[in-house]
Length: 267
Image (cartoon, rainbow, N blue to C red; front, top):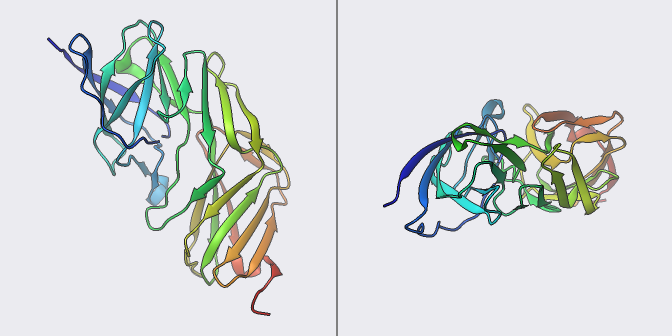
């Protein structure tokens, strides 16, 4: 006979995996996990409050079972608190990872930061901000982010087509995080992230935010190339060191109309 276990996870930011959970084995415990993060992964609203989305999932392994048990979103899409459902692994120590697509064996945590991302309004899609946590009791497990968020706020006129971020150091591709000390490293990654902004229209009297998930560290000379829908290309090099800390937003403000024009197809 299955036991229904109410569990509580407290997270920091999060991702998704659009599939339904398989029926639990009769000898396993079916667990409903309530997650109350102050930063989740996929949607960002006013005051940088974030929310879970349909298809979000976490993966949990234990000291006795290194095959991940995937907990999928049960309810709470669009809210910061949500309920997840999955089969509780046997064990005494649990490690939870987000997104569930990352590979976690209780020692290291491997995943991918996308080279190509999409921004859409008004939901302001963020993407998967990697997190992990470890504890002896699932009811008090806390997940913490291992990356930070670069928030680019733009004003101006016209519609954008894409934003290319060139960090001069690996910021996309495979990453590895040590679960003993939380040290983060990119593995044969790319220096760029290309964001498709789908014709997002800028405003001259309010900021339009664009979000990039970046590995923690200091960035000197980070370069942004912005392409407008009409073919105009503008470039901006950050003249100050950008500091990215895990789980925090780092903000930069620019007026698109005042950024240097590289080419203009209308000339």
